[in-house]
Length: 203
Image (cartoon, rainbow, N blue to C red; front, side):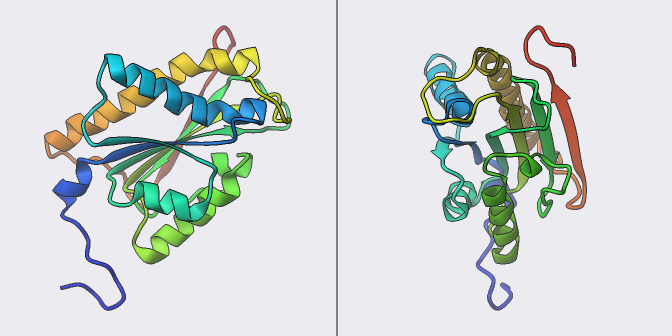
């Protein structure tokens, strides 16, 4: 029985088949285009080597309403966005993940993300409406130039192939675990972070 004010929840097996990769950014703000570029590269690779079925690839400007729409009824959501830091190392990529209900904390990628406010708002709204993602993975790529213009800086562009391989591994690993009916999410309160450097850089 569904509680008043709550929408019906799909069976977990149905939801677990779905995954979404969402690139947040602006293609006219140089390194801010990295999220869109990652999704574009995944689309190209998908034509040669298919991603797991029921995988949605989408580009978004970070609008909370659009994010809720894109990740509705998904078991795994991977978000890619540019981020800034006081002393940036262009191309260095941060990986954050958590289970249902997890929120971006002060040390999460949303703190320095160029669209972190929109993502954080979407997570809070999704939790309130029971429309949040299942497992969430966020990749934040440090950039050097977010001014108006086309083309990413060389270090950020060079980080894309490795980033896309990591995302592919996330998708395949999640789908494999779901097919075997193993737990695929961490506890709601748990979040973890990791980082890997740009090609040729020391981590």
